[in-house]
Image (cartoon, rainbow, N blue to C red; front, side, top):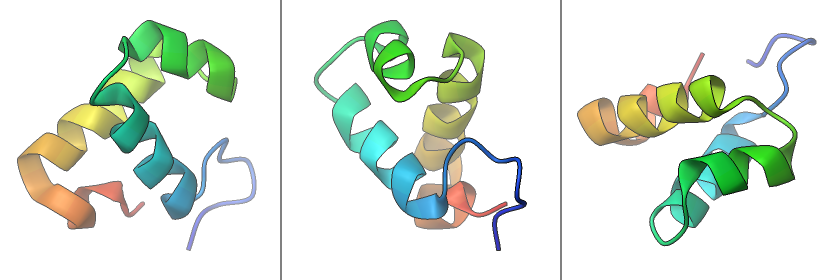
Length: 56
């Protein structure tokens, strides 16, 4: 379960990862209203752990 202040839900994190496969992380992060560091964290967790990495 996503905490109430989280900018992205698990589904939002999936969309982020998919978009970052073909576009720069900084651009996708800006479009989604999150920092590049936050976007990088989720992309790296996905690369390391797969879908499980997108959970809180």
